[in-house]
Length: 352
Image 1 (cartoon, rainbow, N blue to C red):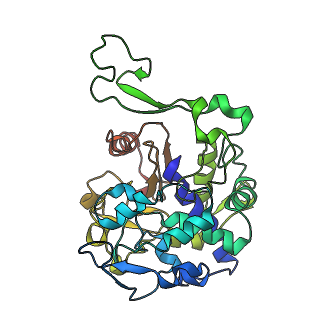
Image 2: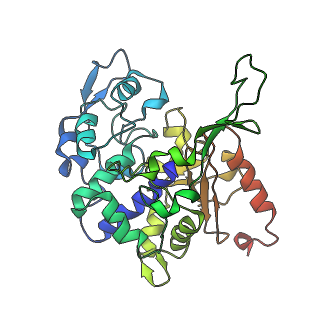
Image 3: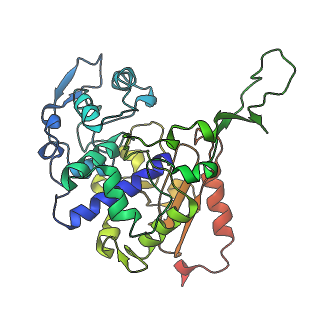
C-alpha cells in the first residue's frame, strides 16, 4: 500500500503520545541525537551552502511533513540528489539509515515549509525508541491484533502469496522494438512491472518503513478507517481517544495556511490549493479552492500504486480505492472517484 502506510504509522505513534512517552513539540533530537547537529541548505548553490537550524525539528514537524526533510525522487534541488546518491529510499537497517539521513542538510528550516518527505520513516524510528520494540512488533501488538487486521504487515505470509497483486505501469510506446509480436508483459495498455511472485514483499524483511512498507487488504484497511470514523474504537478495542482523533484531522499548518501557501511546488499524494495537513492526513479546508467535490474536514491520503482513501465525518462515510498501477499520477482516478461517490448520495448528512 506504499504511502497509505503513513497514516497507520502516525496513529501508532499517537497511542504512545496518549501514554505520555512524548509531547508533540519535543525536539526529535531528544530521542534521536543524530539530528542535534543537522544543517539546512540555504536554497542557493551546491550542497555545501548550509546554515544552522533556527529552531529544532519537532515531533509535530515529522507528523505533518514540515520537518525540512525530502524525497530523492523530487529531482528539484541538490539535496534531492544527495538522497538519490545515498539511496535514501531504501534501507535494511533503520538505525544506520537514520545516521546517514542526519548528515544530509534539510531543504528548509523546520516548520517553515510543507514538503513531502521521509518524515514518517523518522517517525517509525521514534516509535521504536519510545516503545523499545521494532516497528513490526509494535504494529502487530498495538494495532493489527486488536483491530483484527489479519493480513497487514511488512511482508505477505506464505499462505497468502497467491493473493498478492502484481504491479503495473502505463505502457508508453512499443516495448518490443521493431518486432511485430505481442509483449507477454503487456495487458491492455499496461506493462507488468513486478509479477506478484517476484515481489520483495513475499519474504520477511528488516525494511520496516513507516513511510511506505506495509502490505494490506481492503478488509483490513476498512477496519482501520472504521476505527477512525468511530472516534478511535472498533469492536471494543480502543486505540485512541476521540479528542486525539479530532486533533489529528485538524490542520496543523501555521496560521491555518493551506499547502499552496506553505508548500514546495513538488509532487505529492494530494493537491495543494484549499488543502491543509493534520497529523498523518491531508485535510480539506476549502473544497471550492481545492476544485474538488468534498466536505470541509474530509481527510485523506494515497499510495504510489494509485491507491487512495478518504474519511468524511460530515457525511459519515469513508472510501477506500485499491489498485496496483504506478505512478499514482497516471490517471486522475482520485478526483473522478470523489465525483462518482458524492453524486450517488441522495441525502446529505452535511445539510441536515
